Image (spheres, rainbow, N blue to C red):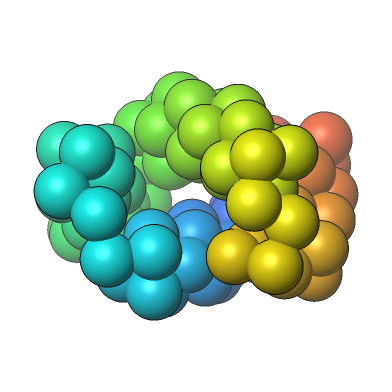
Length: 90
């Protein structure tokens, strides 16, 4: 099992929790896509979707943090950034 991709999966799960805490309908789409990508990764171990939507989630969470600093923890953003930077396609 690829530890790097498992970390990415875990970071994406943390991002979903962050979106749930924001409790805003405008994040429903990205949240559901992340959930789908995690399920897909569980099935086929192909992390491409995790990387794609992890990156999109990171951008979105950074934007929210800039506008509302207390709504998103730095830890969620840092973990996602680190997991994405260590990403491996195998």
